[in-house]
Image (cartoon, rainbow over the protein chains, first blue to last red):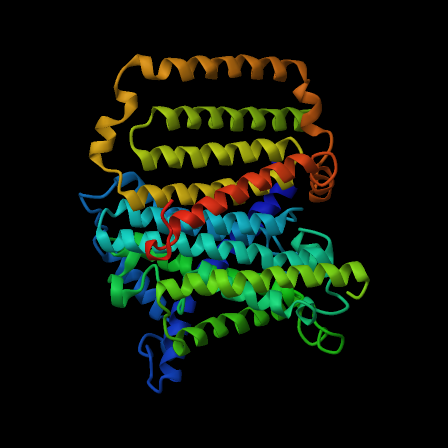
Length: 324
Length: 175
């Protein structure tokens, strides 16, 4: 094995071993922030400010019985949570954290991200089917319809970025924003991307696949123990992923305008920007109600699709006219 | 040389996975399992595309086929709830006569495929050039424009039919 490959492997292990604890800590951050925003304390008992809450939860989950329902499709039931977590983790391979840090400098990085996002659907759909129970099936079907629809807008919304930068390579997309972030010209694209991202990671207000008030738990009704934890982890990882992608595509990745860029190292800027979006996701969850399922789909096809198409057309026209 | 050999090895590995998965699709009796094998087969084909220097096609293969179309297949299977009955009454359990015809056609295709691969010096194509998004676009809207237009007609027809079926009956949606 060459030293080059050894370094890559080390980098991969390092990134994964940082990402998973961060995603776990996010669970606590979310509960604490929601608590503060709702004028109560939130979990504040375990460790300073309750920061070890996730660790305690993990220990609890490890100690729980890992039950596979006898009426389920065993193989698919076990496979489903793994697919979700693996797909999201794979997406992080193409994220450029800074100019030097990042697992793969893939030329079709953006396509790879979209591909992994569309494969992650299987996790939820198959979990719903394999559980062989009504609520789970309903959740799985909602997930399939919702994610297949919103994938379309997500793909369309980032095509404006590809038009302006002329590349699918995420590192080149960041470098093309040296003179100004793409949010200036792609605000509409960014809005559509963010909304589609929320729907893809099925977070509130678009968490209809699990909607606990109507479906008891949706696709993960029958899951417990470590497998349930994997779904949970996948959800928080995908929140981080969508935030990181928003930063890379529209907010200049690790780049900052001239006076600010020397204050902190690029990696810190990147993490700060990502955290900003993660907090935005959490604030969304506390402040918005859940729409009805037909409202969700109608909103997607009747509002988001025309906006995304129009954005693409206008961007292309302006590009042809030499304005952008 | 060793890099070349390893890429070729990867290609054949992916190809074997694709073939075995495809066989499992047509021999399986559980619909959802068969669909999962189809996903695996498509992913393996995407790897083949990538190794042959067409990363854009590989990406689209995963996004469009594995990520969207097959999700709809799974959706339909879930929606109609194909259960134990279908498994027992499926045509494949009713003897040889039903699959003899398709098997004959399939083996003809296989012979053809082997002939093509044998004559096109696959080894040359494996490492030579990379077909990127721009080239695909130029080809699609240049020499293959007619094919693109014809397939868009087909899709439009499908769309109109789908709209017709989905329209509520009180608005005159019956065909």
